[in-house]
Structure formats: C-alpha cells, structure tokens
Image (cartoon, rainbow, N blue to C red; front, side):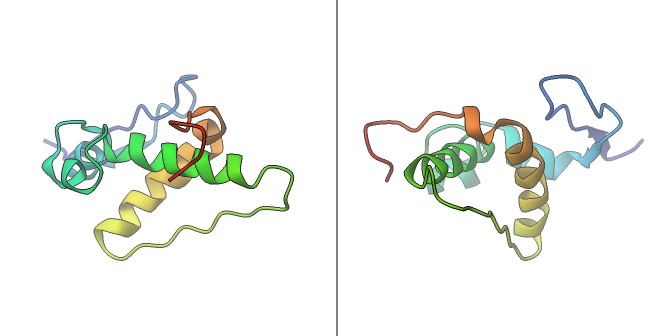
Length: 101
C-alpha cells in the first residue's frame, strides 16, 4: 500500500500522474483540518493561500510581479503544491471584500 495518491489539483484534468503523500495532500486540501482552521478558519489551507495570493495579485495589478515561495519542512511541501496551483488558478480566486487584508 502506497502513501502516495493522485493530487487532482488540476481542474482541467492534466497531469493526472502527479502524486502527493496523502498526509500533505490532506493538510493542503481539507477544509476540516485543525491546523488550517486555527490559522485562518476559512476553508482549506489551499483555499486560504490561493485567496491571499489572488488578493496580492489584484492589489498589484499593472505592476511587474514575480512570486517567490519558501517553506521549511512541511511548509516546503505545501509551497510546492501552492506553486503548482498558482500557475493554474490563482488569478481566478476571489478576494473577499473591496480590499484585501
């Protein structure tokens, strides 16, 4: 039995061969995960991170922009997943309210 499972991060169905360790994937995508709820309380870590990146992109529209992700241990695994998500969905996430926190 493998601890790896298909990531299913790409809504278009591309790259179905990408696999992620089940614990990291659960931490990243689960809206019931206590670790993410204690930080922001609004959806999964994935939802919260994409929402924040989308807000930053919106706040800096028209500017030259690059995004640098960094993390240590678990954070580095999560930033790898976030980086994959940013390339496909960050610009479509919505920022709650008129201004971003």
